Image (cartoon, rainbow, N blue to C red; front, top):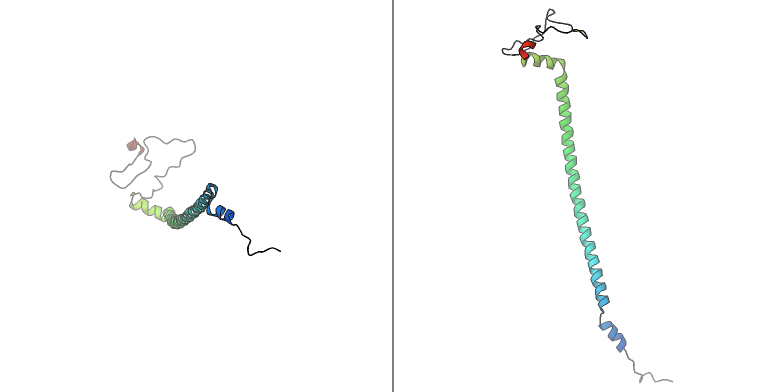
Length: 136
């Protein structure tokens, strides 16, 4: 039988390998720490970009709503300006035009040419263009 109390155990090899870190292990720790730092920085950058894009989307939605309102208002204004009553009122008040009587109406056919001395339009405002001759 063996005497286990007198037997000597040596653990020097285990102590030597764990006490010293090799260059390879230090590089591995630095590489792992660098990779983790890169992941944290990348995540933070992507998160801030997502938030920034969210703000841009909200701003574009707001601008789109404002433009839709402006478009609707312009369509209503266009419809009002196209109405015959509005055109007649503008022609009478702003341009000083009056309805033509039957003697002033000239029907022009496809190949018929108007004489140069004929009055084509007349206004009741002073100093306005009254004929084709005055325009030239």
